[in-house]
Image (tube, rainbow, N blue to C red; front, side):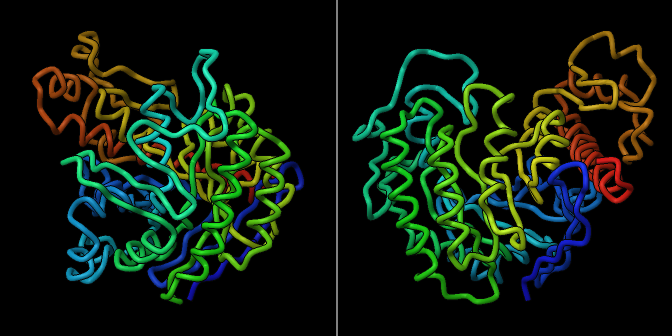
Length: 379
């Protein structure tokens, strides 16, 4: 049931148009993938996410394993029925939590290093709150501190019970302050896990993506892309950290794309600010996910054609214009900046929902315009 077909290649960049076919429908690529961490796009219903133009959502394996548990989801008929989402779904593998609950938490860093600290993670180091071995990772539940073990077998089992159309191999997302030796050893482990995930996967109707790691190191990135690309995965995820600043990101993605088989879909994990959209598509990404639209909406920000607006500011109480006069979303058709700012300042949760709805629509519409530009030969 799963297939990928390239319908047009750009003559100006690595950008391309394609069709991803799954049991729950087709996806036009390139496509932005909103994050539905706990089987919900935060503050929105599944219908809201659909109206925003979302073609595909990605849910979080680790957090759904914690609550409500994959057995509960399976009893409900799988993730699609559980969350009432009729379109395609992805689930990640839990590999990002190896970073976020490990060295990411230890050093307070994200996937892109905002400022250099001089600190470095060396070969043999272990995070404070989790333990990484060749067999898998022992976590402590952020809910009650209970021990949780996830390795390739466990990740496949959880994701199969959740029932998404596209699932990912278990891996370690490395820190941007990991040195070459640590990253190389981590990569060996992730490659071992990739082969085991292929072995343990049972449901043929689910597409399995391998994940390229290798940190900021060109030799490791290229080696990982060649290795993962040589295995019988249905698609390829590009994961991990992306250097000391965003200027390095597209160059690093380019290293990977150089080595990957052209006929398989490529998903860029956890990247997607508005300024990233055109560069990552031109670099060759077919799909990419990010929490940015809803994360910033819940902090009072609206993304618009004229820039990011802070709707918490009292000045917008006098502004009767829509968030973005160029936007066709229902929020911009219906409500003023004044009203949304009033809701925010009054502590009404609806403000978060309206901003989330608008931001998702804005991101999806932006990618739709990029598809038009590729089709017309402008990108």
